[in-house]
Every structure is written in structure tokens, then in C-alpha cells.
Length: 491
Image 1 (cartoon, rainbow, N blue to C red):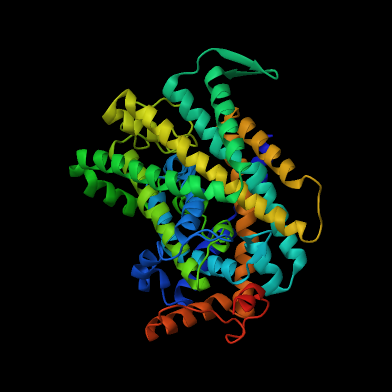
Image 2: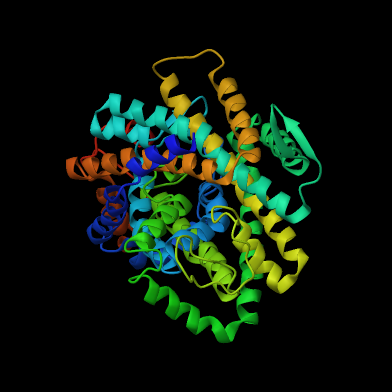
């Protein structure tokens, strides 16, 4: 199974996808005149500019839902894996893909808003919707929808829950061994699986509003607490910070783990973490109640900064500054800690050891708790994304009890993922991320060259902003944007 999944993973995550992600981000940065820099202050202002309505959620709630997907296992175990397989230089390429990806996030999230629909009293939208309406290719939209349901409903949840199980086992011990369907599993992992699935079921059966209300409280709390803890550790080793920065930049172009490894792992884990171009962000963006589509596009671009430049960087600095890492497959690799050779780089162990080196036993427990919140809120985002794509398919073909089947399938994937090996979980997750990224990035590039609706929306928003209007409006027909039926109705 491991070999089969690994082979598929290598095909999807070839050099072509890595450079497609970087190239697309650079292209959209140039075409939008680096919107991620020019309108940075406007991004912050817009965070609290809209309010929840009966049909949609607020900009901040949409940010929280999308951040709950972006800020997850990738920020703790994913950063450790990038360093473990690609060397410290991988961190630099995570920064690059975040900076360029912010422009991609603006494009895809604005498209999500432009082509959203009202479905049974709530807003729905995402790549499947804008691929059908802007590209006019329903078959391609269906491929994306089915691939996304498979990815976020089956493949990716296991990555999040697996890290919860591994972190709990490392923090609290394995306990007694339980024979579970012929496999020997630690009691701690089984207990963690039961707890996660039970809480997850309670929330996802409550609908998107309950998901939004939970994430808007949990996400800011967990991210701020984690960053504050990381800052404390960095300040404790402040004298070593210049050397760590020098190591990151020097290794970015002469990677320890072989030529291209830093770039490959930095981009792979960067895309996994910040999700720019992956096509997940537009689902939450479409659910927001805003006056103009560009507003939510800007808010979602800011979420990429929060994810990678704040949270991922905090993890990377903790690991590197405490020397609790090694580079897999490299002789005489830098490793200051007394690390066991069997530690999986795909697990949260490096991050836990970094905290433990400063905080003692509390460090492991803190990471386990942080990882639970990070991963759990990501699972909520995954369910919402899967539900949206089921709703898209339901417009044409109704499956009786489709959402109930989805909920049970996702909860089963979460349970299974908690108790299986880390390497298999991450490999399957990478397949899900790669499939969505290929389909979405090709889609938004084709849409851009066909009619560039997101760029037209940006220019329209900046024109109104320069004019100092009190209330923004969006008229797609006046801008030459077709099939934006929701906004025509609003006007």
C-alpha cells in the first residue's frame, strides 16, 4: 500500500506541479501589480467590515473558516517534515510560496465570490461553480467536485487526525496495547480517535453556521497562543537567531538533502499549509456576506500571511533554534538534539522536542493540545468544503442521504487516520492536495485568459475606493462579466 501510494504521489507532485505553483503565484502577482503588498492595510481593515446575515457569514467568520483549513497539521508536523526532508532552506521556499500564493489566493477567492449562488438559504461557491460558469465546462467542474470530495472527505482528514494521535501518544504515552481488527494499536490512539470523532460529529451535524461560530472563537485563540509560546522560546535563544536566518537563506540555494529538495519540500509543504491555489479557500470565501467580491478576495489573501509567515515561521524557528531536527538521507546532518534515528520526520515529534528542550515535559503536552485544536478545526473546514461540492453535484444529480453518507465517511476516515502510520497518512494527503491544485490552478489560469473576471473586479474595487464611495457596489454586466447571476439579482 505504501509503495502504491508513494508512486502515485511522485507522479502528481512532479517538478511540473512545483513550478506551476510558483509560476502561477508570480504571474498573478505581476498582473495584479502585487496586490498582496499594495492593499495590505485594506486587507486588515476589511477583516471586520462585514456582518453575518441570514444567508451568509461575516468576512471574519469566512476568514476563520478558511484559516481553520489553512492553519492545521501542516503548521506543526508539515514544517517539521519540510525541514526533515528538504533541510532548513525549505523554510525560505515556504515563505516564497506564501508571498506569491497570496496573489493566487486573491484570484481564486474573488472568483468564488463572483460566481456564488444561494442554495437553500445559504451562500455556496467554489472552484466547481466558477469553472462551470466562467469556463463553461461543466464536465471539468464535475471532475473537480468529485476529486475534492475524495480529497477532503477521505484522503486529507487522515493527515490531521493522525497527527493528533501521534502527538497524544508522545505526550501521554501509549498505554496498554489494544488489538484492533487484527492490528496492535496503543490505547491512547484509540481513545484519541473516539474523542475526536465524537466532537466532530456533534459540530458537523449542526451545519455551516455552527462550524463558523466554533472556528471564529477557536482559531484566533489557538493561533495567538501558539505564536506567543514560540516567541517566548525564540527570545530565550535570541542570540542564535541571526545564525538561524543565515542558515535558512544559505541552505535555500545549496540544500543539504540534494539539489531541488529544499525547493520541492518547501513548495509542497507550503501549498499544503497555506492552500493558496489548492482551491479550498474559495469555498469559505463564497459564503461571506460582502458588498463587493474583491473585498473577500483581499481578506483571503491576508489569511495566507497569517498561516505561513506567522504560524509556520514560529514552528520553523522553534525547531531550528533549539537544534531539534535532522535532515533525512544526509550523512553528518546537522542535529543538535539527542534524537532517536527512528523519529518520523512526518510526525510532530520535532516540534514537541523543541518545546520540551525549553519547557520540559509540558512542551510535549502543549504541542499535543495545540495540534488537537489546529487539526480539529481543519477537519471542520474539510467537511464544509466537501459539503459544498456535494451541494454542487446535487444541483444536477441527487443522491438520497448524500450528506449523511459524507459525514459518516469523513468520520470513518478520521478514526482510521488517527491510528495508522504517519508516512502513509501524509502520502495519501499529498495526493489529495496535488489533485486539487492541478485542477484548480489550470482552471483559474484558463479563466484569466478567457475573461479575467477577478482582475476586472479588483480594478472596479480600486476605482470605487479612490472615489471614496460610502457603500461599494458590484455590477458584473457593466464590467463584462457573464453568468454572475447572484450579483445581477442583488443589483
